[in-house]
Image (cartoon, rainbow, N blue to C red; front, side, top):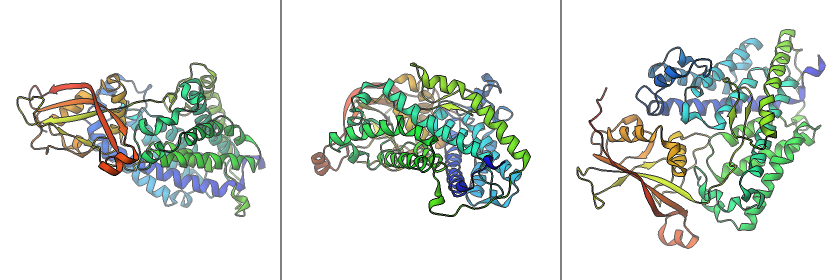
Length: 475
């Protein structure tokens, strides 16, 4: 069927597939390096305890069938290996059916991890990677031209990501309608990047222009994705530029990067490169792609209803396989940045004047002189949740206590998640406390005079001095 394929998008598919493989690699690497402290057998929220109370049908996962830290590590590193193979173009060396199976492996492994990841994997970009990764299975390889229906579904994903984010802003915080949210956002965002301090100090008219441009890109431009070329290409390029601006302004894991990757599939490169000629698609492949398209359009009913609802929710999965999801970000913007600072002391009788030494995290602000680093697309899961803890203790109820216990026990896996621990694993603190501070960016003059990019003021106690009832037994 001639209408089934689109030769002009061969290069778009190639760029998309290699970039998606790179994002898979980042995701699996993060899982391999962080899981033991977060969801491992001795982690803060252990997988075995979770699968005991959640049935397979609600959270399909290989780890529902068997879990051990060794098996999880094997799956995570296997995902890295497959991602590297896809990045190197291994799918192009296989027959069409073999390439599809190869793309299915990282999707299934990623699904298995996300569905047992609990709080640590409750972010919208997890579902976005799964939804896009599922579509990649059916995009084909060099044997066939990219299927029009899958390209359409990728634009449908991109539309929901952008339009959903635009609607949640307009329906949410009044500062988006007043174009003032960016007066605060660069300072209060979850994990600032190396340029965030400078973005915050841009003139306020520039912040208003940023907010207005964001509304145009998210509320108007997405509809142009479904128009003829070259208009659809222009729309996709506008989205890419906007996302790269966000990449410069902060650390948002792979959210911005995967949005860029999906937008590439709407770009027609035929003006710069003659389209390749492909063999006709086999009948079984056409039938499978049509069936998948019908299924995903049917599953789109609930995400569309959510988009149209005045009670729109962000980042919601409506099926356990995360095939079609609702997206959105920053429906409300914090005006004040509050950070939980965790401190320990070796004093067996802690007092206010005891020597309390702070734990330093890799991405979240702590040391006033420590300039933020660039981590995205890598996702520092504990640092992100520490930001939520600063918003409300309710966000930390399930994991903060277990984290403190592991710090008091000198747990090496937990300490590896930190930038610096003031206590070596063999000599953990006797007591730990946590205090809440308000953090603000310094001014230009304060930065020059002190060398500090942050200043802070004490707010209240978050956790009183706490010690272990009895030392935990080392394995």
